[in-house]
Image 1 (cartoon, rainbow, N blue to C red):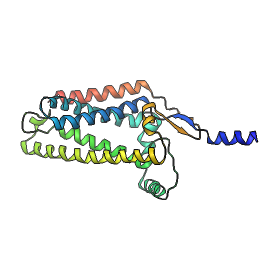
Image 2 (image 1 turned 180 degrees about the vertical axis):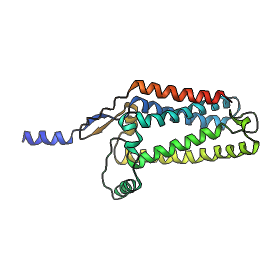
Image 3 (image 1 turned 180 degrees about the horizontal axis):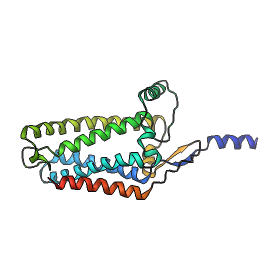
Image 4 (image 1 turned 90 degrees about the vertical axis):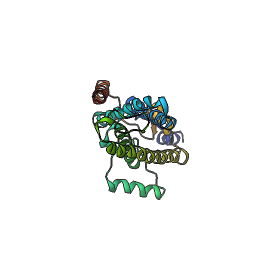
Length: 231
């Protein structure tokens, strides 16, 4: 009897597994804080728009950094780990609609594509802001390099993309709420601690290479700084 109980406990006991490295967690929460500030400052206007531009450039640097880290980062941070093809993604969607339980330690296929969509939207938002103007006193660093008509186009893209970005964020939050409320997963805590729980232990080494992490951050920051300083 004790053996059966012990066997049952061994199959139901969940193991805390390190999935998200410190780099991914800093990146994620920096985006949250940055987008929140950009929304507030964009609505507020005035002198705070100087910081709006600074934070926008920082967001561009974050996306560049994530591109690097998505190639050489820790296992669950790599694009090759969570970007799945259409057939795999639709199969996962069907399994959700059927109520089947399908767990992923890292991003599930839909979550992986949401990461890419958010990154693309943030990049477009930051890049278009470089050429935008509010027609009062705030101009992007590259505003003088293009015609007024081109700047108007970038400004329109900048405004439109942010609305699309807000819709994507709302969808992302809804998906997180589904996993937290319905599937009883502690995703928010996982993105703070980096750990998720699974029935089977994992031998995947998620310890980041801090040298590469600092190298990617330095290259991204220097690249964006040099780009902006040329304006």
